[in-house]
Image (cartoon, rainbow over all chains, first blue to last red; front, top):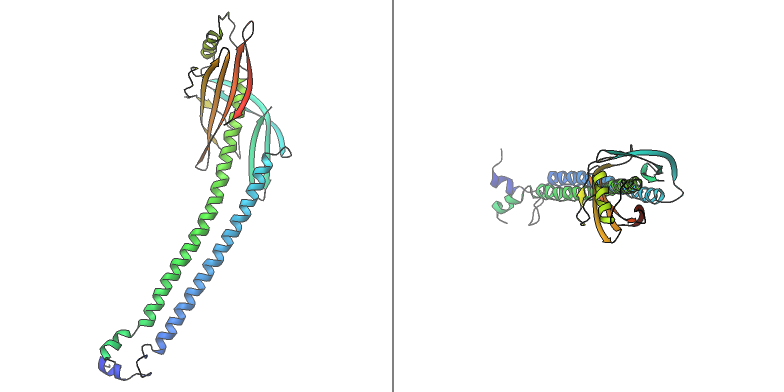
Length: 110
Length: 171
């Protein structure tokens, strides 16, 4: 086993800049490669999430506008409101608008 | 160079690599957190809209229902007496002092709608025979709450006194 003084005097790269061994450089490059892959994966995942969110937001906007438009799909129906113990049957239309999985519903009494 | 100082430089590349890895990891976490927050905001907005549509449906439904109430038969000297009789027959009607009062209710629209959480009425006597009623519904969907109000006018007028309703505005 080498002593410190001995190790320091046997340098592969003599001179004032000889601070790194080849092992260090290889390990550092490996670490940098790993982190780059991690960053790339995260960035790719984040981009996917943002893309899906943007698509979902567009679908949500379209469906929300659709449910409030007169051209939305309607189906007749009724609901029962109980107010302070009294029942009221209210008939009307269930309006539904769907866009790419986003569904909004509204009840419009007659 | 002093060998003792150079000895301290050994391993510095690995330390720098680990530090840069930590910085990159923090950056990655920040990017993912931002993307996740944006995705969550989209879903929250959807839930807010569903809650708002439920509250809107509830206000319209309540207005449609209360338009069917009738003034109890009787000979009323003025609209205030008629309103008092109306309150006696319909407990949800609040005193005509403009103060909101909660009403007991049950209303379920079914799948795709939120949950109606609260229903309040406030009534103000504007002038002889004219009462302004504000119906406020609060609905929730997946933890998002939204309220919708509608102002309607109730007229107690004519001979004999009779009820008439008109929609004023959403608030």
